[in-house]
Length: 259
Image (cartoon, rainbow, N blue to C red; front, top):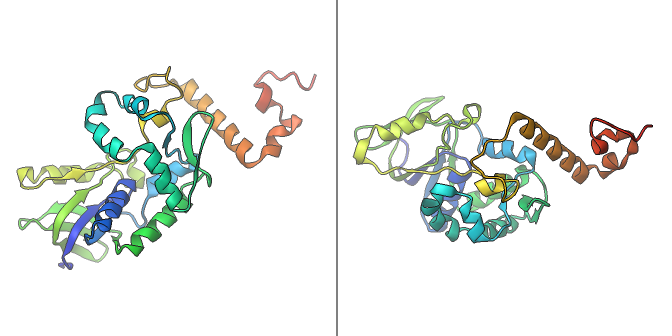
């Protein structure tokens, strides 16, 4: 089954695909986003469970150094859309941000779903179409896109294709890396732009003294998770943190408040 022709087909409905659609639709292109999952932004919503760390507040020159060897390749894109622009973009969607004690930037709502809903409303207003449950399998000999759907195989004729595949970081949420092989199979007949939106290294660093390349130990990761939980409890339920009967949160495993 052949579907109507579209100007630009974006494969992947994560943040990278949605942002590409917003820019292209703003320039007047007809855009359709295809994704194998039944809903958009699944990994984005999962990341939002921890408060949705959008970016970091440090100065741009220092921010760029966090990318290490990738800085020369990424610097032009980051300079075109720096952290300050990201915060302004979020606020324009009705989701203002704040800077935490660590310098990280979070939406005041402290979750991803309000931001995603506002983003999808904006895309809908610009005419962006969503085609979900469409698993991309490659191209045919005529250069048309091939999709596997619940209704069978479909063919899409697009003038341009953007691959926003998200790598292979979370297979359960759709990022399994499988479509990359399909893009390579075309050799030089196609130029594929592979986009992946992720939290910057700067946003993951605890401080300038902690090199991003160092993988924290299991103990450090567990303690970081506990601190994050304490921070959220303090933000959402201050009374829980003030109650002395929960003194183990304040004093640690050796508590002297009851003596």
